[in-house]
Image (cartoon, rainbow over the protein chains, first blue to last red):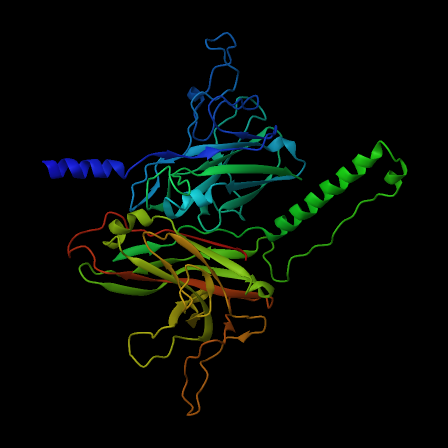
Length: 214
Length: 270
């Protein structure tokens, strides 16, 4: 019995949950997906965050809300276990890009900003990054989100511990929006679930996004 | 029999789009400079102009602006439950790129469902070694052992059922690459990259195996040839091929719950 209890405690101590966080550049054409963020008019759902997770457009609600404000963002998450391989178990949204801000296209880059911290907890990882698109050209709110298709970009692409960044070249379009997500799947190997201590270990990747119109 | 296939590939990072970005950034910088002087010194406007760079990708680059074309390949691997096994010649992808960049390419390979290794291969400690291979002559490799091919050679079937003997680029470098030019992946190392070492700027069409001093055909490393599937003389082809080592598998008679290994292969400038 004591042995069993000890093993259980040890197992719990080696597990954890983690979510991805995004730190976007301040702009009016790329938006962080997080609770409390107001998205452009018409964007009332995302590829993984349904419309039911947005506040309604009711300024008199309690507490006061803003139309198109995210109430419960669905961000990617997984549950790493020390000395075990795993994968992303909950797909989620990272950033929204407004495709109307450029004449021709937008170069969207995403960077992992805490690679050194992640290396304390993961020996390696390959996370599936996807691009979804939706438009409200004829009617808003945005319609169904569909995976972006382009012969020169086969999705998903993988964000890895040996690269740390990805770049997408996306065409511009009126009332066109792109949602950068992390899908289910991929691979990682977790060596530790520590989240404090020497070298500031971290289980959760943080991202920085840029969008350059041309 | 287990079907193992490569289901992920990536058309590589767009070279021309990168160049376009640089040009765009430069354009923005120039615009900012002009505006900053506008309010104070009027003649600066007259002294400014539009500067454009003439940038072209290397001959043989894919027409869509990508650095390279990656074609995923599907391979069937036979597996027998119970014992340790080595399975060679698991072709993952064919890469076509400009002859000018053959030694400056970076080939990223990631095992994207490593968590299912135990379900697929029957052992979580399976290891996969991956190398870059070049054709050296038409037909199958010559071997002293009937029914097998000696490393570093592999028999390959290309487009149109053309067969070639391909050889490992043993000088490849990169991240998590062994001294023999092979990327080693396992459960605790899901990805890495390879950089080719063989300069194939000059190359001849593939023909029959060369003859040694005694007039006998033989396999030789280090001299790649151009396969018939590559018709652009400014393009080169190489293959990403894996070997799978399984220390021991599930007992005989037990069926695996998954049957597909997935990999991601991407190519960009190193």
